[in-house]
Length: 306
Ligand code: ADP
Image (cartoon, rainbow, N blue to C red; front, side, top):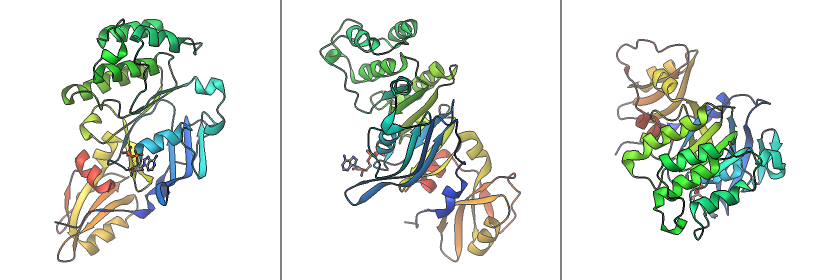
């Protein structure tokens, strides 16, 4: 087995500077379970209207991060702002701007879908009843059956409708398609994103399934070792990144060129190495002994998450 990729330690230097208009702004966030740091000096920014797929391996800390972002889990250090307010002290108006679909949505199972939605409606001054009705029909959810009798996928869809109904400015979804069958996952996500995109809603959803992201997430954030290793539009990443193989010395020299960012590297036998490089000023034509190859999303995932 070959040695795995090692992500460049300096990646966070390339994080965007704090923006006062950011929907969410996390800085130097630290969160541990016992002695294990799950978030380890994490910086992250979500700008209005961004659709971000949060990608990381199982156990990387995606749920923990989303909970910390929403103030549901207290960080031991760092700052987390939502709509410019500290997440621990959000006022009611800011809370009403959030829609959240947790991994295991706790729906009141003895109620019917119609009763559940009526109950939640009473909490919000804004409620798009027409959208709710449209989605209930389109996503085929029985209104008058106890929720306990709905399938896992229908419950997940109902939970999403509940989170969309008050037209949030920030929609946070933790593995939103986990209960759906693989065939429908991506198309459903696509439709979900289309539902909010016209309003300029900021959307973040976590997944460890790469195919969920294709054609859905405009931005991809890689969570690795407690930090956001990289966030960028998927098509831009595929266009600007290359897997380059060759003598280590030639690779290192290339990585030192202006506008070239080394994202990860992997030593190979015989003094050779493979690097994931990002070319900010256009991809150059590389000559032997360097070999360059356009990465797939899976290559990026393998190199940027461990
Ligand atoms: P992901 O969503 O990426 O799968 P999680 O945020 O659920 O990751 O978990 C990150 C790590 O923290 C995992 O190793 C998990 O076992 C651990 N963990 C999560 N919640 C708790 C908890 N309440 N107490 C202790 N460890 C936890």
